Length: 205
Image (cartoon, rainbow, N blue to C red; front, side):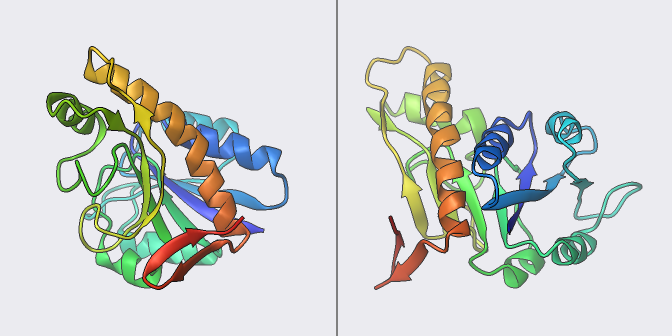
């Protein structure tokens, strides 16, 4: 069984989409941990209801919160194959990146390399896309390295936003696609169908 840890900071809509997809693909992959930078993360409610193990983490250890080195130990004990950042708002420290090289992916709510970088998350992204009068948007799944939104792109999907009136409309359209492609990509990893060739990433059929 392919084992994934999902990192979240908010309500966890992508966590729910991944969990539901993996439940329907019983036997291919499972969520072994849900990690947040908050103790009272709303996504934890869903995790607890579905018997998913939860951990809170912070750069500076506090009561009931793991340090990243302690979290690394937990993830290794769980035989974690892949870390999935699904709305996690903190920068991943080097200790995790070095120990999970090419095994950490992030879903970003815009078509990278546009609208990426420090501070570009959540509605900040959609407001920037709206203000630029972009005609297309959509999520990007990419590998995580030591620079914000810099890792190689694994998958993207476009949505027409030429008729939107608000950034919130963009967010709604992009989120629907996020819920579709993130589980698809995770299952590709579980099936060993994500490969790098000639400097590019390919998803095998």
